[in-house]
Length: 440
Image 1: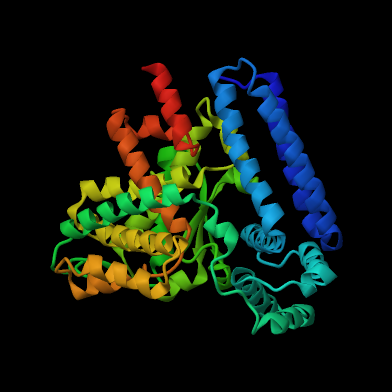
Image 2: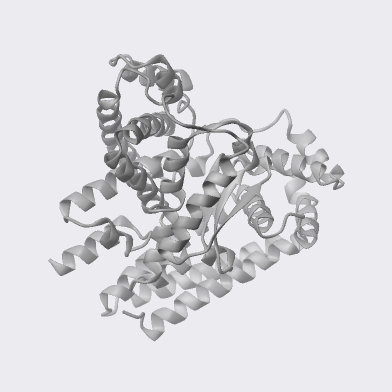
């Protein structure tokens, strides 16, 4: 089912405006002006969408406009409230994305970046902790590549003792308090259920070890078989460890986002520094590639919701499906189920810790809350150590866990097969529900 001409024109306009804005990062001196133009264009598009939604539209047009509207609202909030943070994160991601295609630093982007951080407005602002850490990582990467970093060194030194260590206001505003309490209750219940199902004996270590020098061969062999099964080319790219804020261990980039004819399994170089168990690698493949992110992306492109993917993925559904993929293979293999439950418990701990911080609790209170939950169970010390690694702040963990819960509930409620669910792609869970209800 295709979008109407009117809605298609809005989609095309959004993609054009977004692409034009990204070009501005190659001329950092004018980026603030580009930012204002981009913001104004988004507001115009938002007003147009709101006007069109008052008309009688097909379901697919309504769903698409709701999907696009969410992205525009998020962009506008980030641009209006945290412009420096937003722009620095954007530069970081563009450097990362560019490094996937070619190992050398893009000189044009580098020049634009140095012009940007030389701006008076950037020199005078107090950096957030997030921005400071991103700039430190970029600085390390530039030094490793023998680039002159004097300008960046000055900015970092100026902010060294003045960084904001608290959670940024925009992070607090991403979720409503009402939603956070709902998440807290459901995720706590999930954690307790997972802990109850973890065996008290440590089985994770009793498995085949893949030595660090054999990890790439193991992954390549598995990806080759998945390529034959799906007809999709998948490459492995190793990135510099200074991009760990984006990919701590492993990640996935679609061929659409890279504008290539192949998908990419991204590995942080530090991932190859230690041996892995075969179970760890099996769960990683299921999460990132099949039936996780890559297969989800491929299936959605063949459905009536293919236009939605051009705008972007709903993180809650995208990451929730990747966890559901791990859950599925865990249900088929008891040894993988054990590892899944331990990793899932760590993610639940991460989400609960983050939610409590967002609700205004201190780090000590957050930690005590987690310890109290864990103390109810007789958990193997090795497992417990892994689970407690989740005691830190990470907004993405909420998308991972609550997305998984939402997808699991949806699949059970509507008796969906995994393939039927995947054809919706990574769009808002409420849009998927509306589509399913319109057919009942």
